[in-house]
Image 1 (cartoon, each protein chain N blue to C red):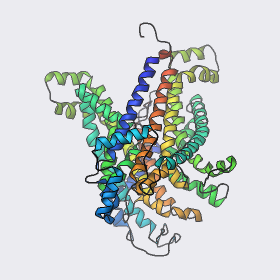
Image 2 (image 1 turned 180 degrees about the vertical axis):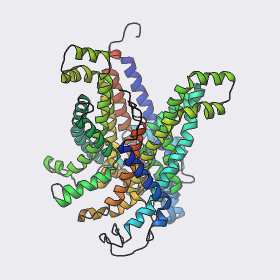
Image 3 (image 1 turned 135 degrees about the horizontal axis):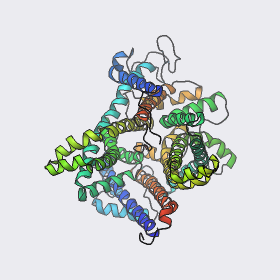
Image 4 (image 1 turned 135 degrees about the vertical axis):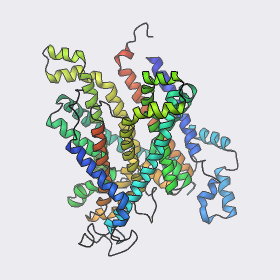
Length: 276
Length: 319
């Protein structure tokens, strides 16, 4: 690839940043901004948009906008928690495997390969069948399944850094494993890992929404975007836009994150991290 | 080369066995008793005992695992908890439906995506290239149900061109089947085309930087000939890989699409089984999905080995 000109922020990245900021605002303040309660019935089912209800009412006559605002905290919160869990597991273990090598590396890598050889959705469905769906189960299951992807990337990145001279020097100085991870590897592995955090968040967010859409994710009475698409879906057959609002909210956030990640990764020829 | 391929085959079989362990273990992680969890609050001591008996829960887990694995190898997938029907009879027709839909989508998506990828590599930086890139990025970030609902609204509710639900039944004519499944096919095509196209473009461009391509240009060959005869064959391995990966995705990612269009496939079968907590059905469906996925990934790797000229003609000292 041709080396890029000094980096400037392209318009697509600005759009992405704006979308992320908007969603962050909804995540932090959504329930406080909501004009109605998430369980409050305020009119007839599928009432069209009006001055009081900007996005109309849902299949139970609840205010769509309010439910979207409440759902933001649930949908984004669950995904953030799961990604945080997967990174706090995957990154240290991946770096450890890269530094230690040998049996530690082989055992961890083989275990990860095996888990990754089953599609995530299928593994998650098996676990949800056994444990039933609740918020802790959702977060831990998705976090654990996703940590395999994080492990793989951190391991490869750390292997590269670990072979550099400064890491060699630190080892010869007799630094312990904690110093090696915290002071030598992590600071240098940060850029690809930050981009990966964005991609993993996107994936997890779509995944949680997808599970909720299937009726196996976030359970009522909590509002959540995937579940809202499912609940309002029959409206589409009458030409109503109701299910499109939560679906568009999901799409806008993932597009936003993707635009920013695309900009962060610009100049690399390969896409980091497989998305499915 | 054949040693590499045999090794990959052996690794695939080993993976399948490990996957069977995982699927079985996944249903064993429940603290306490599976039977109690399935029956929930309606449990009476008698019904609990009966369910434990029928699930074989009175035997130790390793023994149950071996029995289950032996059954699978003989094509016996167990009995559904709901109505005692053999899982195999319920599952295979649904599997056939899913494979048919995935095949329909693959037949459209793969040629389209590879052509678009090569075209955008040939016109790197052009309006076409940038436009294709933006559209690819957008469709990749859109959830299947968003695309699906949008298409239902536009092509079905507003214009009545295609049916909104993919109702299929046995003995249906081909034309009727194609009409019923075209909307889900379009959704699957949209979500897979983007990735195949981008990877094809990247793979072709990766080759385009090499010296022999410059040589081909210096010989005075036209752009089209350089790309099609010199670059594409050498980019074939990664392209085949991403195609196989996306077909594997088609077969599992179909779960959401089947839910949107109410299509009678294995995905909805598994989702229904999970919400009814029908253990044998879930295990069987998970094994089938995982097996298809493992086999396709293995095929992709083997194809990549077979397509790599350096591995195809090993030098004597390497062998």
